[in-house]
Image (cartoon, rainbow, N blue to C red; front, side, top):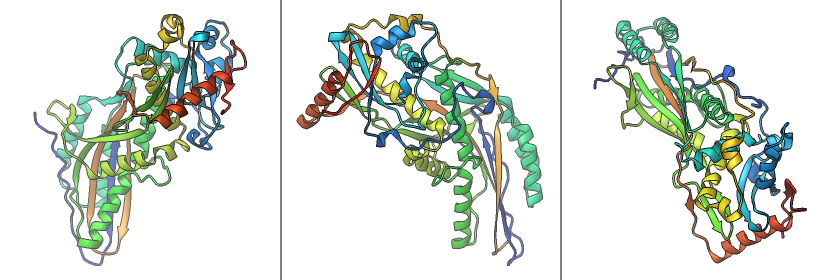
Length: 432
């Protein structure tokens, strides 16, 4: 298959002692936008990360199941008592129950009953792991390639801006793709919204302290090259995709007698360079883009910090942990051990938070300039960025020492002894 040709942009050198004008073009395949905001999506930043909180809340799945069959649904049941960050679960055969244990922190978003049901059905019915992406139309990829060929060499900043303006008009909408969960579900919107913010962050249209955009990384690289060699790095077309995924070797969990506790479940950003085929499809090329790699690495390292400022990232963090914990529950046959019938949640519950998913969303573009007092050059970096979310994972039991096992057993007993009554929906876990 033939690759889409890179636009013939090469640095043009002019008189010495002039200025350097750098323009970095970035096209992003948008995955969502304000039009796709899910019900209950928050805009205010979280105050702190729940992992720093010592307080844990227990939630009875048996009583929650009973509440789920009532009309109207009580708010505390709909939003799982405000629990967002899940730690683990305890099986209690004496009360035919599975007790979820998690944390609720002011400013941190809550999980919802819809999210729990979506993930139970996904795992118990052996559906594809949840994922999303936004795919460019093949004809638009071909149009961009044709535009690059028609434009020829660019020798001035005015020509760069003219090209960029035409490029924004040429780049069309991208098709929304969701798998593993209902397209109208809150879970789907969380993935889409988090991915969209990541695209905006990658191109400098959104900011998170300490995480430079691809465009800023590229311009910093150009500045360093000028200062050390007097030359600009090569110009041309770059195509990469980013996607959220669980970190390598995770999630891991501690497995005890009738209980499990998540150990690690970190959200990471992966990237891979792509190329366009003759028919306009984008496929993995197997190579690496250093600017894309640097952005993905920084966001992965600082994801927990970013989640305290970006509610969409906090929501996605919650869902990764929920998905992992539900998989552990299934592997341990928690419902069978507890004697708890989940059939209503698996087949009878009607979602309360569904909203239409737009069939497509517009692409995004950005450009930046910089100046330097050396020689005059024109510089264009033209990356196309796409991506999504993949919740593909394999839960891994962590090796447990005798000390770990004892700690886990004390945690399980504390959850059981803290319960005020058999029919309590929730209660605070009191440490032994």
